[in-house]
Length: 347
Image (tube, rainbow, N blue to C red; front, top):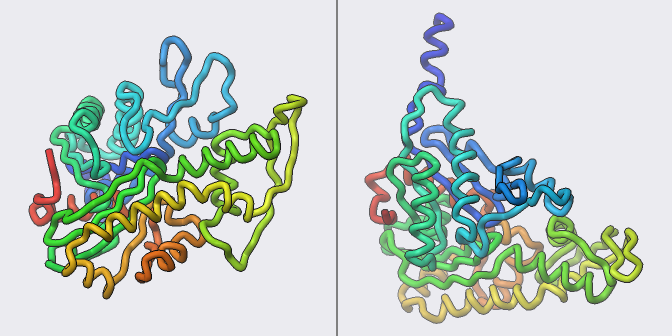
């Protein structure tokens, strides 16, 4: 085959007319129909104070959290799963979409499917729509995140069988029972990974007079945090600023301390799951008893959380192999067979 035909047959010549977006509090993921996930970046933007001019977006901006000089501010424009700063979100989304589309030949205005929390308000829905359209989208469709996650992990959402999904993100925990391509019952609580980070920051401030930033708290959560006592108890050295002397300080903390300090948000997640089960129709409840519950989202990676939920509900709990990409994988599946999944979308 000639070099020209090789170039012509490459994926770069496929029109980018269908794009899926998981606009998360912690991370934004984008997929292109036929190619899968093509972008996974932190939902962080560094802006110049006063002018609000964009300095950097994504991973580069996240590295600036807690490290910026007076003239630059690193912000997270999404809070509790929804848009807190419409203008910055629009600029961030425009940057990510441009990054995806610039690598492809046909810059057609794309059809975009966006994953949103199931408890989103109409005002928040309008903010998502306007941000996506201003970023270059043509038609904007929304899908509830637990529905997208269920599709992403391959659950039979279009059958009469009841399927239950727990999607724990950075800002929200979404719990839904799905049957016949619809959400039969759902519970949404604005507690997620960020709430656990804040508990860790408050604990170290109160007990060690140590001030740390959100990135350090996140690292502590992932390395030694756990929802239940495990066989693998750990210790970790943590550096921060001493609140008394004002100089840098190092302390050694144990996983048991972190487990205790995050118990309140963990219990809130457990109670939300129990509440969702209590309002589930009995026939679907029997399906959940047989087939169990699937956990998705970055929060499902907290050690022992699946075991804790299994103990509290007496149900089998399964964590997806790639929990952080479930929603965007579901959006990609929807784009691959748009007519089949049209009923799960809202404009």
